[in-house]
Image (cartoon, rainbow, N blue to C red; front, side, top):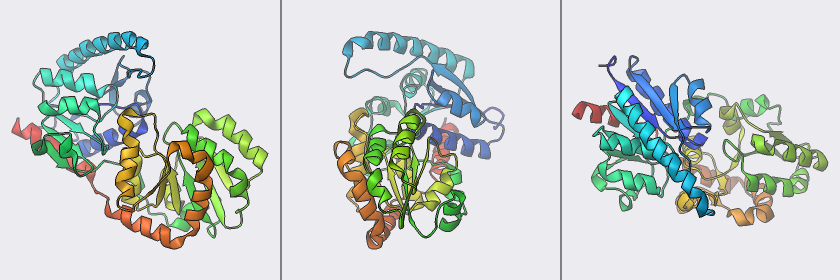
Amino acid sequence: MDEELRILISGGGTGGHIFPAIAIANEIKRRHPGARLLFVGAENRMEMERVPAAGYEIVGLPVCGFDRKRLWRNVAVLVKLFKSMRRARAILRDFRPDIAIGVGGYASGPMLKAAQKRHIPTLIQEQNSYAGVTNKLLAARADAICVAYEGMDRFFPADKIVMTGNPVRRNLVDCKLTRDEAVARFGLDAGRKTVLVVGGSLGARTINESIIAGLDMIKSHETDLQVIWQTGKYYDDETRRALERSGAGNVLRMPFIADMEAAYRAADLVVSRAGASSISELQLLGKPSILVPSPNVAEDHQTKNALALVAKDAAIMVRDADAVSSLAGLMIETVADESRIAGLATSVGKMALRDADSRIADEVEKIINKR
């Protein structure tokens, strides 16, 4: 069976889509070493680099997202969508997959739509608490819909929903470092409270601006506080200059953190966007957090993700519009409150759904065997 098994995985655009996709692929490959896996992404997006680096083959579609603010630009978007559908049909004809898995992102829609038209089984992995338009359209003909939040039957047929959780990078969960060992790896002081500030794989302007605005306040707490600040490569120069001007010696700034497992272990508090992948990591690691949802996403799904945690006292949320004026002060206040930190950690840990990659691989095998 392994020699004949062909799995197509489509989606990407951000690390929040790519990392779960790779985790699913790794689990399938672990179970079926002879299986062939093909990724389909969007041309010029980060999956075209990250997926080959993980050891998998990928092809690109010329698809891109709709411009909701400048509608006249969508003529070109529709042309690219037409070309992507044609390319998707060719990929299916040549690769002949046993199943197509969609993890979200621009390429996922046309690829799964083409698969469904050819009566190829499809599995949707919906990561957010509020389903996107594309997945809602695909749901009726999908064989299974793997979700991470309760109440998703308001978007999808209840009989197709499987509660699996979102896959995360295995190295984050398997890390054996103690908190003090992780702090030492960054050359920091284990006696100080440590805040990890991340804005996703590409960085987040509002979070960076909020830290810049609060550098003097952060500096004034340098005897008991230190910050690991991932800025994203696009904000490297701007944040470097701001940190140099402030003279804050208790802030370790870097455009990208390669050793995220150590960064999470070092953190007493995490400041983050509210993408589904980030939230799943916080849940699995039991990390207290302040979430600043991005307003620039479809259906404002990051706010809905964050509110799902806030409702269970598992995170604190700051709206994007309020972050520059309030985030740094709230961060300093929260990390100093050990009782609050402990309560958030307990609540978020209770929300974790473990072994999501294995649960999804189970569903893939069930669908293929049924066929």
